[in-house]
Length: 258
Image (cartoon, rainbow, N blue to C red; front, side):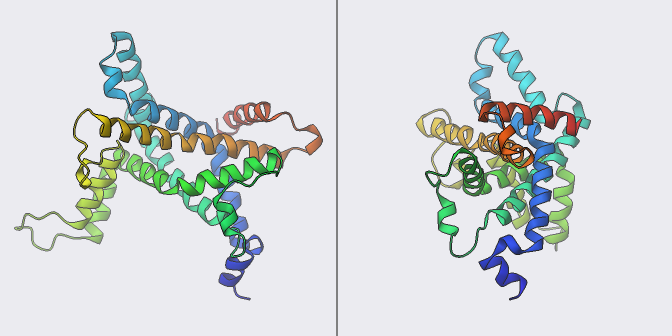
């Protein structure tokens, strides 16, 4: 049986999947607190316009959140770190999709949350489930976050893959459309794709609610992933309750990545 057939039928036996699991695991541990922070602040900042219209104290707090979310409170250096972490999040999403595949016989079961598994297996399946169903959203956020940090890099890639053949012609290239939508969708703006959602209103609020909800998915993945790692690290008899495990793992992640 070749590698592809083993991956389709018995992916747990493929060495590449095991290697990707280790990459996914340790990248997730090192980025756990970052992902948690960027996810929560991003979901809050979906409503930044409403927050800016509130009292001056809330406006100052919103400006601080914006600086934390965009620049990690460290100016251009922080924005560059933010971009690097965004690429790492993309690697997490890609490796997570590979690890998610359970095999051709049981893949449908991984689309839902099975019952009666015990809390440890439930946390594992919840992590896998949320990661699969939100992978597209996470990819968009990761790409757009990287673009805002390194716009010149994205423009260079666009020029290489889709070069300007005639500088005298003023035409929008396919790559320009792609970059435009990468940036546009980061903020939950969908009026450019045929949906009449301009300005305040029910459509605008519904879009913001969807973006804020799915924006919290990486935070859920960070917490559930930390619990999964903790369960693998410690003997069953010494494992603390779920909420204590999550807290201990996140504190340990700080020391690992400091």
